[in-house]
Length: 176
Image 1 (cartoon, rainbow, N blue to C red):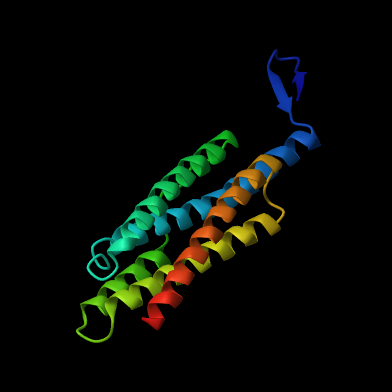
Image 2: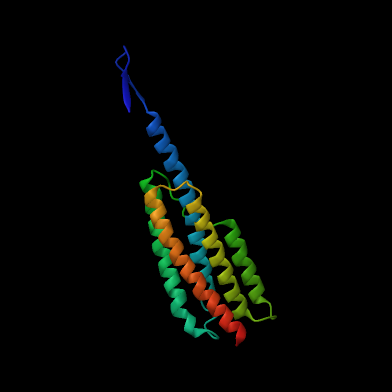
């Protein structure tokens, strides 16, 4: 940063190219992190929406759902902190697409046709696949700084693990 003093006694400040680049990089990083925050908020809302719908048939899954919600809330806090550390403002909302998807699931589950529990598991797997894909795209975009990449990579590992668990449960339940 360079200060220039004018004859009037007022100072003006000029940012170096490096400082401008860092500011732009922080903005891009914050935008990507906000996109991931929306996805995590969708994930939390989706898993909280599932509660109660599958417990009668799949009571053994309750602990796993609770674990996913808890992990997602921790991811949310980490994302908000990363955004704020980069000078961004966290947009702590879910996506419109996620809200529409949850509404569609509710409508589908209200119909007296089909296996609601299996359909719910399929929707969980679908949502986890979308989260994994979004996180992978964020990492490969080149828009994340090293610290953000490290945190997002750990989130991605957790999402993949969750996806695999629910995919395996879905496959097992299809055979039953």
